[in-house]
Every structure is written in C-alpha cells, then in structure tokens.
Image 1 (cartoon, rainbow, N blue to C red):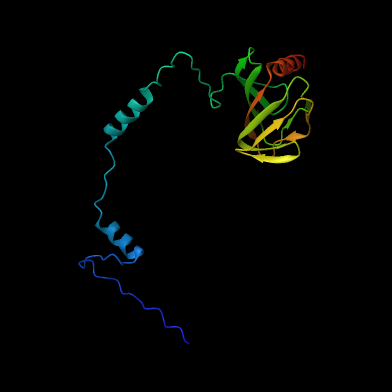
Image 2 (cartoon, helix red, strand yellow):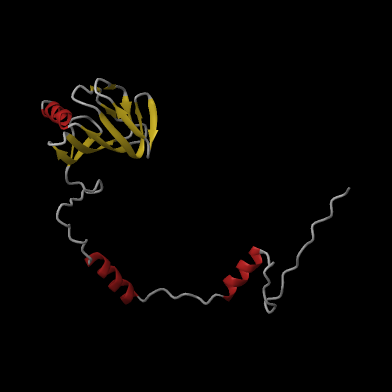
Length: 180
C-alpha cells in the first residue's frame, strides 16, 4: 500500500469568494489585506483620555472596609533583618489573628524562629522561597503548628508572602525586632 502524495492547493484569486474549507493561512491573509487601516486617535483625544484616567478617583471606601496594597511603599518596615521587610495588614486582638505581608529579597534569609506563641500559615504570592525544606512557588500554601520552627528559610529569587499568625506571636516578633 503506497501513500498518496499530498494534494497541493493553489491560492484563490482575491476576487474569488472564500469557502468554509479555505485554509486558515489563506483566510487570514485575505482578511488582513481587506481590512481598512485603523487610524490612531489624534494627540488631543489621546491627551484628554489619559487626563481623565489620571483624574479618576477610586471609589470611596465603604464603612467597615479597609484596603492595603503591597505596591504602596507606606507601611513597610524593614532594616532589622537584611533583605526582609514586613507590612502589617490587620491585627485582631479579640480573635488573636494578625495578617502580615512579608517580602524577602533574592538570596535573603528569613530569621530562624520557634512557633512558641501559636501556629502560622501563609501563601506565597510571588516568587519562591525554601520553607520547611521545600521549594515553594506563587500559589503554594503552608501551615506550621505551634511548637514547630522555621529554619534555613531563604528565597532564591525573592518572594512576597501573605502570612497569618497569632497576635501573641506577632507581639513577640515586634518586641524582638525592636530590641535589635
């Protein structure tokens, strides 16, 4: 049994209508040639549009809501541990819960510590970090029970993580950072 040679199609003349079986590359090429050129907006229209975008204010914050951004420099605290900085997002003493954003620079090491005032848990938002002997990437989650320890925590390429811990543990951390 011998294979039949592939049948070669010859391009249709531009005046001939396209059919449902027309090859995609031919269809695409003919549509591109037939499309009318698009003119960019005038400099005046572009300037007005950009001015309106810059002037638009975010929606007012509704009662009971609060927003924080990792992109804003305000609220970040660092300098105690080289290459590590923290941004406290919320402290709820009544529930004994704190949410903190942590950034670790590429190659920086997070200080070893014991979880002696409650557990902590976190999600890597961006980058990577070696935590508990595992290489974690964006989207990975961990839980560290009370009595466990973080040791040899390092970020090969830098990372940002969202961590929740007890208010008791956060108070101890803040006292330790203040005494350095």
